[in-house]
Structures are given as C-alpha cells and as structure tokens.
Length: 355
Image (tube, rainbow, N blue to C red; front, top):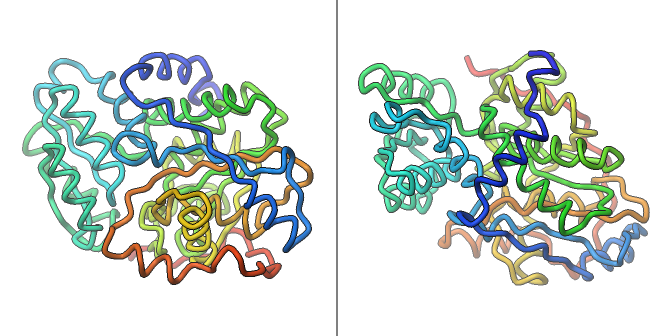
C-alpha cells in the first residue's frame, strides 16, 4: 500500500459531514484531579491544569464504533443492502454494526467469540442482528465462519477496523477534538486493531502536524506493535482485561496508517488499565469499560511523556458488563493512592502466533 492510498483528510471530512445530526456530538470532559495526581506523584505538569477526555463512551451504542459503521453502511450498493452484511467482533463493533444496519434497513449478522461479554451479545441481538457465537476469540475461526456466510448467503463482509470507510468515520473523532481543543499538544488513544487511532491520527496530524498522537496497547494484546516490528500483519493470541482491545491481528490499512501518522505506541499492563477505569468512576463519575480506560490509565501512570502540554485522551467505550463492574473497580488502584513510577515496557513484546 502506498502513501497515496491512505485515507485522506478530505475523506474524513466528508464522513464527518454525513454523520452530523445522525450521531451524538460527544462532549469534551476534563479532570483537574488527574492533573493534580500527576503533579503530586510523579512531578508531571500538564497545560491548563487539567487532563481532557473525549467522551466517546457516551456515543450511541456506547462506543466510537458507530461512527465507522454508519459510514460503512452509506458506502453499500443497493444490492449489498438488500442481501445484508456480516461482521466479526468481540462486542463493540458488532453492536455498532447492528445499530447502523438497523438504522439503514440492512439485515446484519455478527460473528462473536463464544466467551464474548454477555451484555454485548445481548445488545447486538437487541439491535436486531443475528449473532453467531464461535471460537475462543475473534481470529481465524471467526473469519472462516464469516467467509462461509458470505459464500452461502451472499452477504457483504464489513470489517470491524481494517477498511477505509471505517477509518474515515473514526477520523471524525479527531476532527471534533481539534474543534473543542484547537491547541491540543498530545492525543492519547487505545489500540485494538487500529481503526480508531488510524482515523484520529490522520485527522489530527494532517490538520495540526505538531500534535503528537500516542497509541496505548495492552502488553499481551499488542497486534499493531508486533506488526510494526515485523513489517507485516502477524496473528497473535490476545490476552487482556480489555476485551475491546483484543484484536488477533492488525490490519493492512491500519498498519500503513499507524506507520505514517502515529508518533509512538506504549504498552501497558492490566493494572494500569483498571486504574484508569476506577479513576473515571470515582473522580469523574464516568463508567468506562477497560478498553475505554486504557488511554486514561496510561496518562495517570505517566506512561506517556508529557511536559507542560495540553493532553486529550479518548475514552473509547463504556460497554462494561455490570455484573463485573464491582470486581473491576476493586482490582483498580484507588486514585488517592500514590502512583509509583514504573519502568517503561519494552515495545513490541513478542506474542506467540496463532498455530
């Protein structure tokens, strides 16, 4: 893939125009307590005395994904719309495709892991999608099942992250960040398959090149880091409390976009992610899922180098299973406790490939 084929700023702007009035304009939240904690515990000071948070957990379906799926639905031909679509997802993309397909009058089928979060499965069905549960994670088995449904039923496969329309729709998050915080210095985004950070980074870097875009991956669910190190897409076996960041591979599109636009990727452990989740609940009164809290946790634990800069983290989703919320909150470090400085995680830690 050449640079000329990357998703352009014009394409992102067009996607954004098509979404206006159809989805929520999510708020820009902020936390002075987060900034104070950084200053008190590790001596890090941020501009404005606050950490900014783009509230994508307050988007329709509970995550940013619906921006992408709504954009994808608009690209389908009349024949494809009539036949229906199929996607594979651990949860949030499935919910978003189910909602967007229902909104567009398109039949939807979602292939999900057998162990998918039950509330996410129920939400997909609640939005009218057929759910097929198969395999341990969204990897080769789910891909095979989706391919079989394409062959048997004539469905159109809609990818959860590796698609130019998906990336363009996600880029609308970046445009809104720049509108609300035009002098932003650092944007921090969680990474699963890379669809969100690809769109956000392109929108931000093409509009404000001096702004740094930092990706956050779980240590053992780091498909993009592995792909960057190898120079190609490599299947992995993802393991993380953040199921929404559990992509079993990066995408061809997302690998190219990240290589072009993202300044750095930082690996974090589950404890850091859950500290972000607990902080959001205790101090910001916002309910995030682990994937949606990864960027916030990374900033709170000073995993991202910041020096008197204006920082925005993307809270990408809030679809946490209620029966597990108490357990996850207990596992997260309380915000009032000092945050010990930690050694940086080595980038691109090897992950055993799928056999």
